[in-house]
Amino acid sequence: MGGIQPPDTGDLSVSVEDLDAAAEYVERLKQYVDDTISYEMERVKERMKGDSNNAQAVPNGTPFGAYEDARMQWQALTKSTANMEAHLKLLSAKLAALKKGTEDIAQAFRDAEARNAATGKQIERLLESATPPPAAGDPSTYPYTA
Image (tube, rainbow, N blue to C red; front, side, top):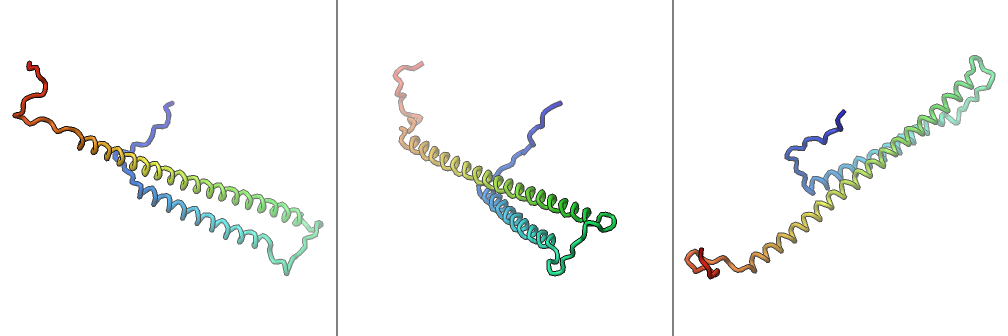
């Protein structure tokens, strides 16, 4: 059984602007998820409270164990709501990590571009300071001929 091969990216090229745009998009997506989590969790909690002005107590001795069923359903709803909230917060944290990673990659690109620019300028200075090659008709500076 072979390992998973990396995808063939072909001639994929990514600019720093693309990475910045991706980080911005991930930030907006994370904000959307956070806002949606807050809104939906508040809605769920409000619905779970029910109508407190018209509360109905279900006695323990009702037929078919209605009180026990209601209590078990309430526990299941509370647990599933907590699980959903935990999963959504985990998703939000992963989006934040993705954004941070994208920003780190963009910064590495910027640093590499700055180093390349500095190296290029240094090479240009060295080439400018070098003595030009002798012209075709000029005698050789090397005293021995073959």
